[in-house]
Image (cartoon, rainbow over all chains, first blue to last red; front, side, top):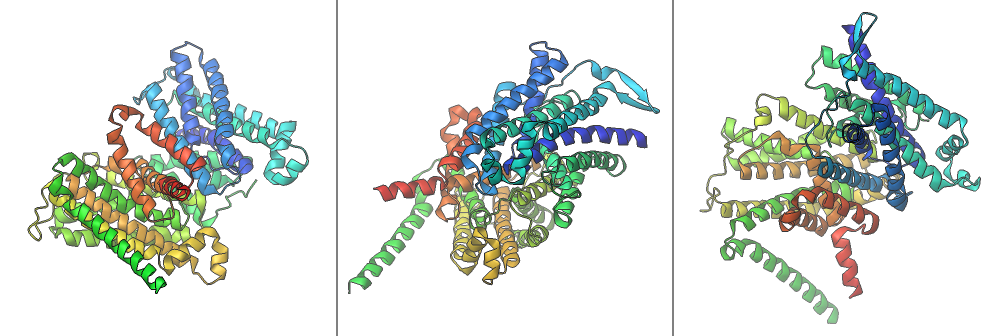
Length: 284
Length: 321
C-alpha cells in the first residue's frame, strides 16, 4: 500500500515536473510571471482530447500535435502580449497574464463547453504488476513520457546552440545581446517550449482525470510551488522538487486526509516562501 | 484679494459638488422606482468598498493580492453565523466583522510581508489563502458546506427605515459605503498613504528614509482586509443566502479587475471600476456568455495600452480639451 502511494506520487509528481519546468524556464529566462501557464496545460489536455475523439487520431499523434499547436500559441502570445511589457515590473506581467488566463478559460468554455469530459483511450483498462503493486498502463505512461520529455529538454538546453543562447540570456541579458543573440527569438521560442511542456502534461494527465476548462488552475498552483521549491530557473531542482511534492501529496492524502489534499501543497508553498524562498536547491 | 477669492471658489464648488452627489444618492429611490436598478446600485456600492480597499494594497502599496475573496467570505459567513447562532444585532455583527477581518489580515499578512515576500510570490501566497478559506468554508460543518446558509437576517428597523425592503437596504449600503470610502480616503491622503506609495516605488529607499515598511505593509493589508470583510457582511445580509462558491479565487480576480480597469493608485478609479464591471454585464445582456472573454480582453488591453485605467483615460482626454 505504501509503495502504491509512492508510485502514485511519482506519477503525479512527474506531471508537476513537466508543467513546472516550463514555468521555471519562462521565469528564469524571460523574467515574466506567467499566471496563465496552467491554461496551456488545460489547452494541451483539451486539444489532445479533441484530436483524439473528433478526428480519431491515435493518442500519440494527438499528444504531439497538441504540443505543437499549444507551443505555437505560446510563441504568438509572447510576440503579441509579453513583448509589449518586456522589462516592466512583475506586477504588470502578473495582471496581464491573469487576464490571459481568464481569456483562455473563457474561450475554452465557449468552444469546448464547460462540462467535464472523460478521455477514454482504452489504455486505462490494462494494468501491470510491478513489485507487487498494481499500476495502470495509462498512469505509468505519464512517468515514462515525462522522463523522455525532460531528457529531450535537457538535451536542448545543454547540447544545442539554442540552449546555449537560452542559458546566456538567463545569466546576463545585456551581454547576450552584445554577443549577437537574437533576444526576440529566444524569448518567443522559450515561451513556446514552456507551453509545449505544459501541454504535454495536460495531454498525459487528461485520460486520468476529467477534461474541463478549469482543469489548469490547481495544477498551476502546484507547479508554482514546485518552481519555488526547486529554485527559480533551476530546472534540475524543479525535477527533484516536483517528484518530492507529488510523493508528499500522495502520502498526505492517504494518511492525513483526502479533503484537504490540495491544501497540503499550499501549506508547503507558504512554508517554503517564508523560510527558504530561494528554494531547496538554490537558483539556476 | 484675488488669491483668497480663488481658494474660496474652489472650496465652495467642491462642497457644492459633494452635497449634490449625496442628494443624488439619497433621493434616487424616491424618483426611480425600479427595483432592478436599486439592486444594481446595492451591488455597486458594496464593490466600491472592496475596490477601494483593494486599491490600497494594489494601487498604493503596489502588491497584488488574490486573497481578498478570503476576507469577503470570512466577513460574509462570520456576520451571518453570528446573527443566526448568537443572536447579536446587525450593527454589532458588522463591527465585529471589521475587527475580525482586521485581525485575520494582521495574521495572514504578518508572515509574508515581514519576510519580504513580494510580487508574484505574494500573489500566489494570497491566492493560496483564498483557496484555503474556500476549502474550509466548503468542508466545515457549521457553514453547511456546499449547501450554504439560508435565512440570513436583515437588521432591525432604524430611524423608521425598514431594511427588509430593497429601498431600505439601499440606504444602508450607500451609507456604509460612503463611510468606508471616506475613511479609506483619509488613510490614502495621509502620511500613511504617502508611505505606501514610497514603498511601492522602492521599498529599500523608503526604509532608508525612515518608513517602517513592515509595519505599514501589514497595516495596509489588514485594513484593506477589514473593509473587504465588512463588504462581505453587507452582501451576505442583502442576499440572505450564502454559498462557498461565491468566494473562490475567481472572485478575487474580479476584484483585481475592478481596481485595474478603473485606475489604480487613485481614489476615483476603484469607484469607476466597481461601477463598470458590475453594470456592464447587464448592459451587455445579449453577450452574456462572452462576458469572461470580453472582460479579460479588456484587462489585457488596458494593461498594455491604457495603464491608468478608465480614470487615467478620462484625465488624458480632459487635458486635451
